[in-house]
Length: 112
Length: 117
Image 1 (cartoon, rainbow over the protein chains, first blue to last red):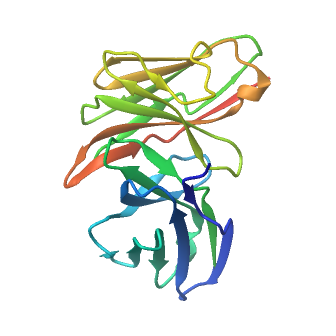
Image 2: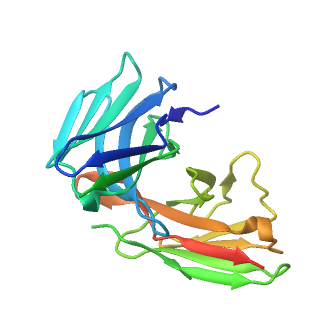
């Protein structure tokens, strides 16, 4: 039972355009959500996070939106750059502990 | 920022041997560390939660006698893959729960590629 899902395994975007990566979750106990970027053969690096008390968090080119009623979050990258090409994982944490539950990842390819 | 290291970054071993992977939090103390496994083109699967000074908590389906975890200090956790077999070949990633600035969460190591021949 996947509690965190990223339904798009891959996404291709032209440089300069917006990249939108989506994530859905089922566990209503999740109260903190994170996005990680991962290159092959490397560990994930933190990008941006959002608490369930907010619906938007912005950091430079990255914005995360949270729709609690729909149990959906999205990561917007604008403008997209070739260096953004990587696998992006969303993760969720519940208020009971520190454990993260990861989605399956979306491979983003930004074409020059 | 919080830094987590893993050693070795890559290891190749023969079937039947044991391999130890170290995970260190370099500039902070971590009472809790996590071990993940990633199969090719798959997500990170949590294997176990390692708590300093106590037994690790394993996720369902993970053999605790095969994947031995020791969290002997606040900066070091080790994962030993015992009697490794080719199906154990994978990318193993650890994370440590700590604080960096305003963030209080998991920081990931760079991963260890294990290949069992």
